[in-house]
Length: 283
Image (cartoon, rainbow, N blue to C red; front, side, top):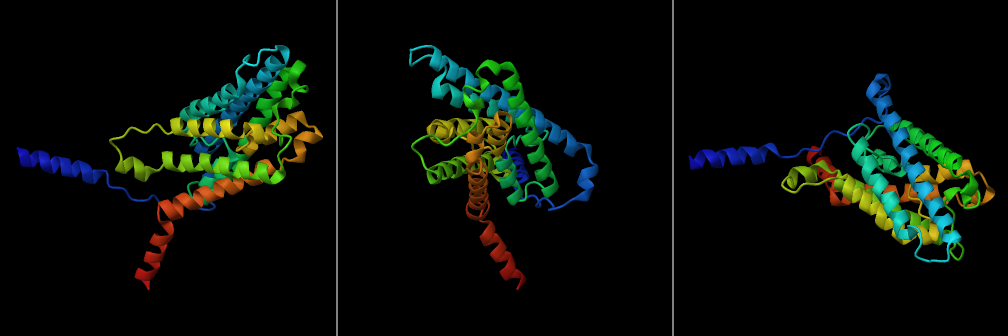
């Protein structure tokens, strides 16, 4: 009886052994014929729309409350804004992870593409859907808060006074690195197989990463770390001030995402060592 239990336990352990899934194809024309691709793009569009609507509305609402009362503790404050961004990411990733992977951010999509988790076709379609959703979400904010929208710069990301462009770029690179690194770690199937006894709810650490980065970088850039968020707000606000430093909110997140993908795949997951070992064995 004891041996049977031991064998069953060994079999259960062996069933959890992990093998890396094959990399996504760079270009897969057949993917364009599948409804699942377009369903995922629609999910990314709606999720990004809701994300921008709630978060930018929170930013504008807090700015109005701050100016309309002398109490420095009125309104949600920077802490509340950070919670709005982190909480919405937690909710939306939880809702869309099973459909599109819950990217809601071109930088996340770019990092996963570099790691060959998604194809080029899917990555491009996701980014277009995310940017379109961000524009529509900010359009709704302007419609509902037309009285305060222009006064508070449409909730657009801008480099704060007293900070140079290098500081802003560095803040966006590091902030996006933290986010994308968390995405890779929280969704790593090898970790789930190895630590299956530890329940991991991926949206939770991802949402907390967004929350913590906002606390650190709101005073510097207003916190981008999501090119769609910065682009959508700039398009609807459409003032020169919003476009002056727009490149920071694209270059910074893409660099941060690339570093996170390389670090996770080739350092932590030892992708470079595995490739070298395979090359030597073949030789």
